[in-house]
Length: 216
Ligand SMILES: O=C(O)CCC(=O)C(=O)O
Ligand SMILES: [Fe+2]
View (cartoon, rainbow, N blue to C red):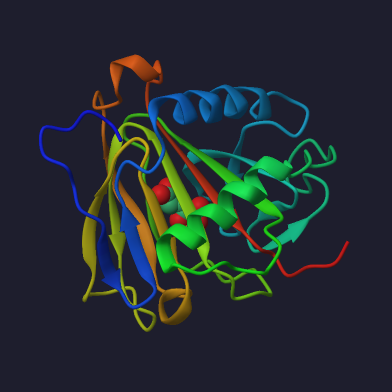
């Protein structure tokens, strides 16, 4: 747990959507951050995603296991330097399994095989969207490092209300599966300067772990 004055309780945000504050201790956060810095290096490193209509995402991204592009998965950076995507480390698969067990109280048997690492500098945001490019309904596991953000968790039908705004801080875990697997969600803003001093990260990193359901 991080050193909070008041412990933040775990919360069920919607059916199948669970927020577990302070799941990663500082050591685990540091190790993940060090790995993210390695993964961000070229080839197949951190990149800016261009959307089909030409707009650029303000968040920069690096993928492991499978390369996500709008809207699909590939084994190479088809919308970038065309390099093979970096492998998905076993350790992230173990982390995903532990996260699902923590959130739901039972294990998930689907093999996690892809990670999306999102890097938010001050002013970056992510619009409401659904994670719908996977062919597997295993829960999405989301880990946050650095600056706090407002994570907007909506409903499965529309991009409009009802939604819940949840503060995700460094070390927090958020899992969404079951009835919430295809809920709209996004990050309207981060709170620059809120990253824990001891972590040594300016900005916010989000690591999203998924089971793609794709072969080979
Ligand atoms: O940064 C976050 O917390 C959310 C990221 C996300 O929704 C995604 O990568 O699909
Ligand atoms: Fe998402």
